[in-house]
Amino acid sequence: MIYEGKIYRPPSEAKSIILQITVGCQHNACTFCTMYKDKSFRIKSRTEINAIITTILAQDSDAERIFLADGDAIAVDTLLLIEILDRLYENFPRLKRVGIYGGPKDILAKSSKELADLKIHGLTMVYLGVESGHAGILTSVAKGVTPDQMIAAGQKVRESGLALSCTVIIGLGGQALSQEHAIDTARVISAIDPHYLGALTLMVEPSAPLAKAIKEGTFQILTPLECLGELRTMIKHLNVTHCVFRSNHASNYLPLRATLPEDRDELLETLDNVIGDQSLERLRPEYWRGL
Image 1 (tube, rainbow, N blue to C red):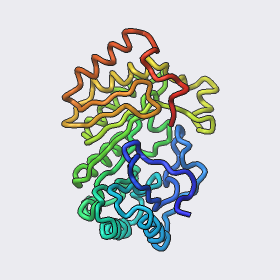
Image 2 (tube, rainbow, N blue to C red):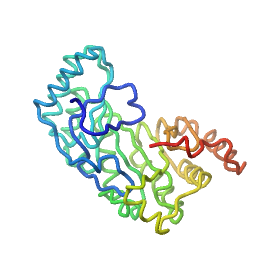
Image 3 (cartoon, helix red, strand yellow):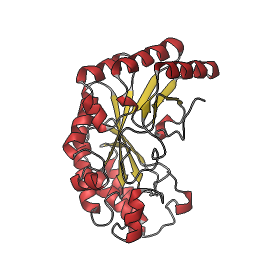
Image 4 (cartoon, helix red, strand yellow):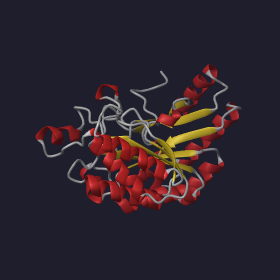
């Protein structure tokens, strides 16, 4: 068996071969997430990983992109990660890109030299789930880090030379903290200055801990137009150097693509037009949305 449990990957890794070198997520406490709740975190053995690589090689030796899963694969010891990267590039002659999920605590646990060494050996992209830049929201959703720690993790990846893709979640503060969530998240993302930024929209499965707060009425989810308003506020306050922005995940009500800051005015105008119409006709219906 190549995979244990369900496999998740960033939208931009849709064409990548998924190499599961860890099972689950080491943190696995976020109240909005159910992706790895049915797994106990472990790092696969060298023997297991080599066997998986051999199997994948037999299936597609021309692979150009590989993604290292599961949710916190950067927690793997750096020497083993380097060994994996070296073997991949030795065996897949057309390989151009290797991506990985990186939790903020595990990024901070790596030295700057370790991250730079991973870059030298062919790691190209780190995906960091920022989710929110608001201290209270990060605490309430049990993210496990402060905004300053999140900034430090993102900057550490950037300084290593690795490409950095961050994700944020529209609606994560509910109606009570919508404005603060948007502004503080923009501040944190601006401080990190990632190469890529993806905005997802909150969707809560019934088994997620946050679902209880929604059911009890202590957390009020945003309406579709409120989500767009929050996104608009965040984009307005972003100050990034050159960032490819995407809000076209299946969870989003309005698919958007832009490069910031170049396309900011056009993006804000699009949002203003949709919000101003006060109509849901241009938005993705609920039954089309997905995680």
